[in-house]
Image (cartoon, rainbow, N blue to C red):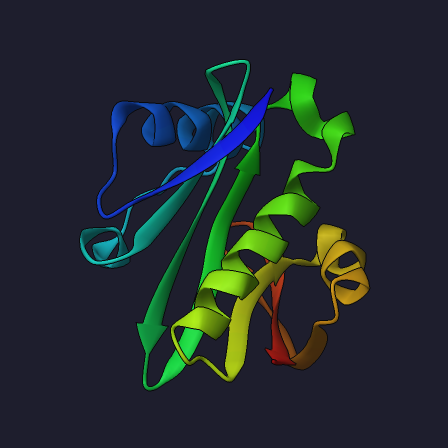
Length: 137
């Protein structure tokens, strides 16, 4: 059974998923930042096991989505799309009109399928190419 919950702070399940995906699997060195102090988190459960997470926050009037992570063995379940829909619905309920995210270039097509458009130049976050993407809702 698939369920999800929002949290106002990091918890051990969110940390485990992010560290597994971003540090152990993808090799990032710096996973946590000041945004983690005020972001809102989405945690997805499958059969009561935490399997995916993401965060959202407001900056300069725009909503931002980030740190979308799905444990490898659950990636076939389209949980990334589920999280994007849930986050966008929450942002709409909060009165948001625009969403910005920083996409790894290798997964840019996923976000384009979700209605996001790239803008600006490609930049490096640690060793990894990223591009900003935007969607008006």
